[in-house]
Image (tube, rainbow, N blue to C red; front, side, top):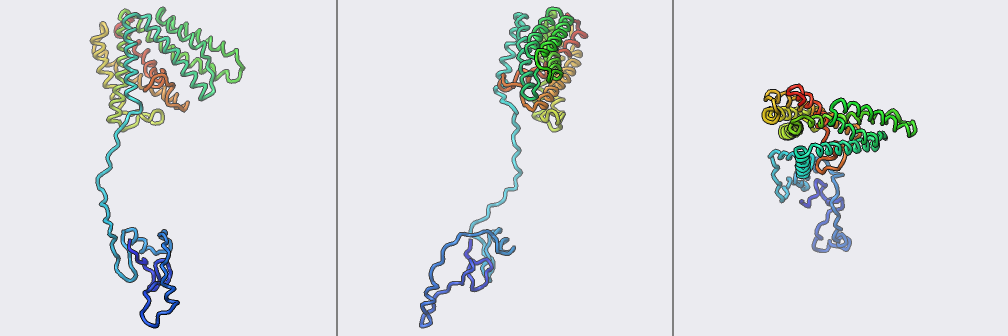
Length: 361
């Protein structure tokens, strides 16, 4: 910057001190004048306080206004301002996709192997998933809301419901469900009465939400072509979720239910419907005995709707609990319940439509 006084009166220095002039030659030069020629201390610049608006504008524009003279442009050139629009930020997935894909492929391999080798092994896989899901759900309810849903009768009754549904069908599943709900009521009586109503209500809710809906998966398996029915159910649900994610991530602009799940979009829902309908037509035509492609279109549409509603229902529960995931058991996915959210409500829909289209088998 220039060393001018930025508009100070003549005869006054930059910092308000008398202006220093060279001592004249001759007898007029005295000791007093010599004392005034001492070098002044260097004082750092101070903010703009004490200067008028014009002075501040000049400094802001990179100029200095010497006393009584035109403004002098600072020697440092100004960098040109960029007029290019800011580059859009690249969208990122909310989870570790590498871990999610690896875990998903591993789970799929285990499920398919157990499904086509020994049906009883697949029933065991469903039992394990139900028990772990109940443990995650009841643990989060107790941690976040102080609700103590009885886990022991839920776990034992849930396993019994899955087995009864596979062996005796819908009648066996209903009987086991009623006995499990009764066991929840009785077991909670062994503890103090405070909170009894909310605890047993949560227990009955968990009974229907996890093991009861899971019994429809094993009832699909019980048919003669059961493995292919279960595979169709799994494929359609996974394809629906994949279509919703892919289309929503790439084209999603309009929120579907922002108060429940801000990440879901209407475009994603259309992607889920399109992907599931195409997959449904292929599965019904080539995997299900007596099935037709047009039945697959209806089946895919129903699966997309039920999977989306199930996902939103789980999101509502997690939002009420103030958590992102139900657990951390599956890297890149969360917990078991975070993977069952769309599968559980879809199972009875697929079971019912297949019974209507091609019979119970």
